Image (cartoon, rainbow, N blue to C red; front, side, top):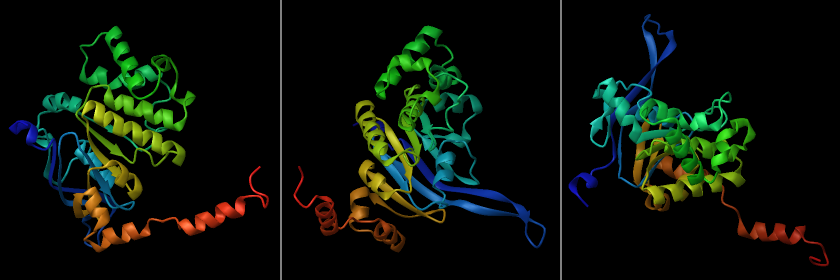
Length: 286
């Protein structure tokens, strides 16, 4: 491994993000709330890093700030050593080819007015305008195939697909520029449980096949445990614990991490056996 390759692909340093509240304080000054408070972490190339915590802890704000969609009060986000918030607009646009985002809602994140081809090709029009119509069409077809859909699906509208298929389309849109980093903000929380595993397996296959790096945001500990190499636990805008996923789950050091893990329901195998026996007819299964 070269020196350049040994550096983390993503580095977040002392990130702070405030939100202005509509009301004012007793002294007439605008009030604000600190959504992200001094957050730091790094993600190595080809790895999957999870941010886990309850709703309202600042996870999604962190994701949007890492993507450069929101501007921090202070701190830095470095992608491949380049500070997103110190780059000129043109340089940032060029860098955006390297990092894309998958949002939580596969319904709201796809424009229903456009066919799938245009939905997926939209980043190409902005970031790779030199491609002609045929090249864009070919790339869309190849990308659809890579997420388990068919190239002919490019001619259909988003409402013609199931929720799981729509999230595959959203993943295809994120992949179309061949990025190195994908920020996935609760990418399976809006899906049925039966579909979640399929999408998670797809994400892991894509990571292995393409060498992708993932920043995976979720409130679901079982999902994070299944898919990430390292995890950071976020509480009230701060990271309270971080480390290899298996180690954090096996031996949590912070009380908040322990409370999250303890809150995950664990099926009682004895009760499950009793329920299975009770559901069987008295004469056995015919």
